[in-house]
Length: 363
Ligand code: NAP
Ligand code: ZN
Image 1 (cartoon, helix red, strand yellow):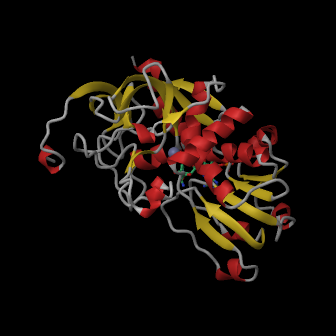
Image 2 (tube, helix red, strand yellow):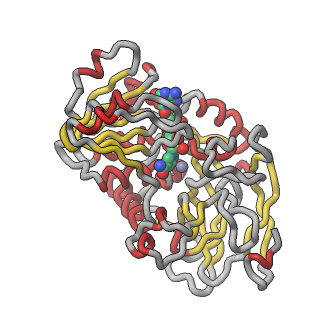
């Protein structure tokens, strides 16, 4: 790709350390990448922690047929760090500030979605990794790196009382992806809420639903997560097994169910648990289409939706909510050298409940 496709102006850039996958079958390994020097509206951040989202694995392994991966791929969109430099037009950040970046680094700013503060649905939005990079060419590189340069509008403030920055990083994806649909569908005190899949997203969903005052029921395939689910704020836990009795006692009772499962599974058994006008929202993103029985929906006017992360203003609202309520993710902090082992464990649903990479290990 030639730079003239993007801009005739030659961009000044610097080298950054990162970890990348060279192909769908490769493990992640050290690489040197280029980052643009901060321009007019840019914030440069030294990355302190980056969470590992299951979307990182889907992307590294190119599991999404609609979004093939361009290699080398540097994943990571749960980023917390310290501001090192700002462009002359930046007003909200200065060197030394703690700042965060999630799944988005740009959008067109003037479409209907952007005007509504829903940049994640902008037809021209740029994802933090594996999107075309209009500045340097190639694709964007994510947070498994020692630094990143991002337009100010897409940089978030971390409330100062959230001292556990390793645990704050996952809020930037797992946090907002679960907070946003629960706000949209009116999860409040007294509502009955189901959470399907107790992984990184699922554990944040439990914390938020509990904080909103809902009655929370967790559905997990892992019997060993039952106690944890209760500690995280669940009121009831259903371990999915061949024994369907436990499921049937919840038929027609849920106001809202959030499905955060990363793999193929039967969603009809959950749709039947919704009450009249109840909603189930999918945030989990397996590539294979789900089979949906019309009868699961029509008799009780139930609805099935999807939701993608959240807009920038709502992400800041979620971070401020976490600050007020002292909410962070439960993390296992790892050095970047253990990232491939972490991917293997995450693929087996074996993490409590998010890996957060200590980026000092990259130095
Ligand atoms: P994760 O930590 O790996 O959690 C996924 C959980 O799904 C597992 O812990 C497991 O929970 C359950 N699970 C896994 N395989 C299963 C199977 N075969 N059958 C039933 N349950 C299974 O992943 P995550 O980071 O939370 O991400 C979850 C999904 O959300 C991924 O597909 C990811 O790409 C997607 N995502 C979407 C958005 C969005 O904007 N919509 C944002 C971020 C991530 P149990 O052990 O409790 O059964
Ligand atoms: Zn994510």
